[in-house]
Structure formats: C-alpha cells, structure tokens
Length: 112
Picture 1 (cartoon, rainbow, N blue to C red):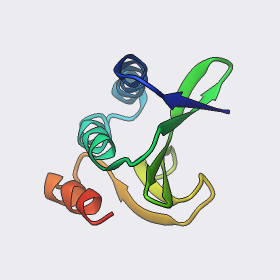
Picture 2 (cartoon, rainbow, N blue to C red; picture 1 turned 90 degrees about the vertical axis):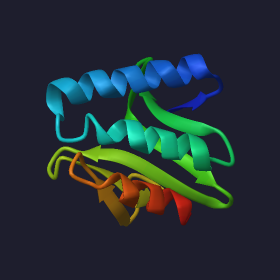
Picture 3 (tube, rainbow, N blue to C red; picture 1 turned 60 degrees about the horizontal axis):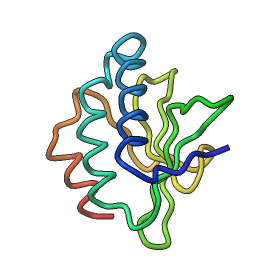
Picture 4 (cartoon, rainbow, N blue to C red; picture 1 turned 90 degrees about the horizontal axis):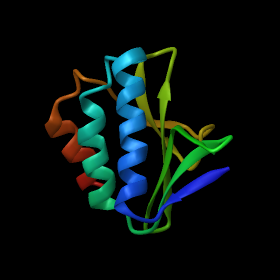
C-alpha cells in the first residue's frame, strides 16, 4: 500500500523517519538522503507516494516525472539508495550514497 504525500507535514514525517532510520542503520546514506529529497521535490510533476505497511511509512518512494515513474529504495545489501525504473523490481538506473558528489545528484535530477 502507498501513502500519497499531500502536504508538507506528511513529507516532513516521512523524511524524519527515513533520516532517523538512516542514522541508526544506514549511516552511509544519512547525508545524501537530504540532497535526494530536494531533487525529488524539485522534479516531481505529480504526487509523491511512499510505501506504507501497518500505518508506517517505509523507505520506498515513487516519484512521477511526466509519464515516467521512478522508485527510490534503500538496498540493504549494497548500502545504497537505488533509483529503479517504475517499481521496486525495476531495473536500477543509478544509486547514491554519502560519497556521491552533490553535482552528480543535481545532474541526475536535472536530466529527468
């Protein structure tokens, strides 16, 4: 099930949860997540949706840019935030972690 981010309060709650979990279990993405969030807000052309399970928002987010859907998900095996085409099972387009230069994050979102 997905929760639609309809206002800044929901977005803030989602980002707070993501950053709290990253600070405890995924410190290799706890900084880049903020840059990615900015890119998502900048480029979305429709509602942002996040995975929800039992009333809790999880670390999976779908971004709509025109007719294209991108899925952002944390990969526990690689320790990266992956961007996938269309769904959690979609092909990996790129991945980010704290060593990713901010210029690369900007370039990715700029070219969507």
